[in-house]
Amino acid sequence: MNVLVVDDETVQVESLARGLRHRGYQVLEALSAEEALKHLSDNHSKIDLVLLDYIMPGMNGIELLRNIRENYGFLPVIMMTAYGEKNLVIDALYNRCDSFMEKPFDLDELIREIEKAMENQNLRSFKDKHLRKIAEKELDEVSFWSYAVYIEGKLLVSGLNLNKLTDMAIDMFVELMRVESGCLMLFNEKSLELSISSVKGSKQKHIQEESSIEIEKDVVKWIVDWRKPILLSDIDELFIREFFGKMSEKIGFEIALFCPLIMKDKFVGLINLGEKESKKPFSRKDARLLSSMSGHVAVAIENAKLYEGLLKSYLSTVSALAEAIETKDPYTRGHSERVSKYAAVIARGMNLPESEIERIRIAGILHDIGKIGVQEGILLKFAPLTDAEFAVIKEHPVLSARIIEKAEFPWEITSLARHHHERYGGNGYPDGLKGEDIPLGARILAVADTYEALLADRPYRRGFPKEKALEIIKDAAGTQLDPKIVPVFLELVEKGEIE
Ligand SMILES: [Fe+2]
Figure 1 (cartoon, rainbow, N blue to C red):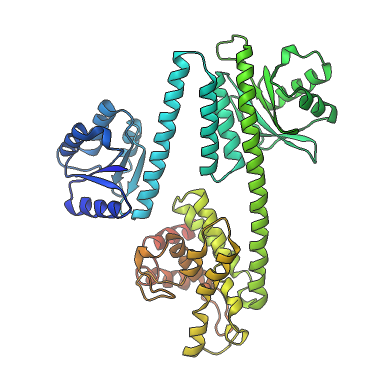
Figure 2 (cartoon, rainbow, N blue to C red; figure 1 turned 30 degrees about the vertical axis):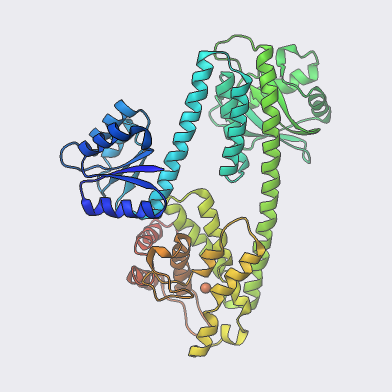
């Protein structure tokens, strides 16, 4: 992937270019907007993303962005801003700037923004391509199927999240079928209920999330036997018409066409669609396409449910392991849970993606699991530890990593557990990693772990008062702790998001 870096400061351009090249990107460098435009006119087809600075002599970042939009369409652009330049954001957004990086930022953050911008760009070009197709001629099955394949791909990327999947599916149905509204409901076979998972275009402003409606067995049987999409106006059976009438009220639009989601013989859910935007009647072709798509979505929903079940069982393993640590060391009762909570709040405060926040949360619960292997005499000792005893304690991150690795969790948390006692300045353990060589999640855990440890009572000392603990954390920025994470943490404490 090719990135064009534009900044009038040579040092900044060189350092960004070096970092990005190190991560496998091809980089073009420009020291002014004019130079950037020259690169774009010479190599436009080869440039995938532009990273540009706002303040530059001559043409500034916004003017360059405008020029890019006029001449190069939606080429992804990330703008680098300094603190206090927030007023430019509206102007930049108006010109479809994909993202902002407030200086100073680290390379990990930048890479995440680049990945996000590229993902949006892929989605945009995919949608454009298909919408153009739809505009040019009647929607064909190829468009539908390729959308379905795309949905499955996105589903894998989104970590098989059921809500995201149904949101994407309903967006797709509404967009491609050109209807005013749509709703996807999931069936719970135990409670015999249909619950609203995603809704679009409803007249009701406040549809309660996961609001559900009971469904009688004979209605389920009718739907499963019927299997295909059907227009409500074509149904003779009064009890079915009544059921869908009730449901229309609940979801806030008049259902015109519905389609069961069935996988093998299992009723998974229901897609309800409102009228067409054109007010024209649905054609048989519409119904056929809806039917072929819905099978695909039903499979994806079942997969997502299976995955969620699997995650639940992993999470119960995590809780059992966490309890095992606390049984061994009652002084740390609740420690892992609190570290996990603080770390997740910090990760969220740093705008990390949901999947990353979850990974850090789980790593927080398990980071000290290796203490299981430390003798109780050392773990619970009242007096200060001898060097030999401390050497034993220092083994625990390695042991944590070894245990976690064996469990083969679906989150990569081994490295976070192994490195949670590394120090930003480089003299931590077990590997003496330094600065950003320490995984970001482990640097976040270190802040959360230190804060919790300072507040807590230990066999050999009372906990520090909160103010003192915050002071110690502030002083540790740059030596023990990441100086970019500490201010985020302190702000979160100030806002009351961390107690
Ligand atoms: Fe630890």
